[in-house]
Image (tube, helix red, strand yellow):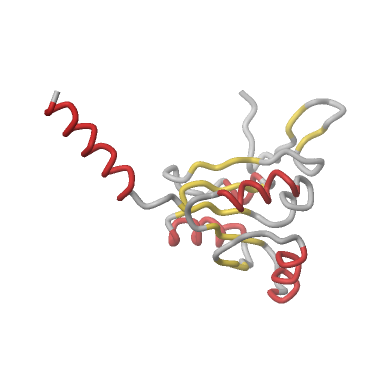
Length: 139
C-alpha cells in the first residue's frame, strides 16, 4: 500500500509542476461570430492566451478587445499568413483557433489547430467546407 501511495503522490506532484499550455486565438471570424463561446474559452484557459491577428491597427485591436472584455496575455499583429505560424512556433503555442485554412497550413504538427466554421469557409446551403486548391485536397 505504501509503494502505491508513493506512486500516486509522485504522479500528482508532476501534474502541478507541468506548465499550463498556451493557446492562440485569431480575432476576426471567432469573437465576432461566436463571442460567448470564445470569451468563455479565453477567460478559463489556465495558460497564456495569445491573440494573433491579421490586422494593422494595434490601437483599434486593443480597443476591440477591451470593449468585448476579452481576456488575453499578449496581442500580436501579423502581416502575412506565414507569420502566424512563425509566432505560434516561437511562443510555443499548443492550441490555435482560426477561421481561415490558409492561416493554419504552415503551423507545425506539435500545435493542435481548430478550424472555426463560419460563412467564409463553409457553405451552409450545400453543407460543405470551402477550400481552395492551395488549402484543400479532395479525397
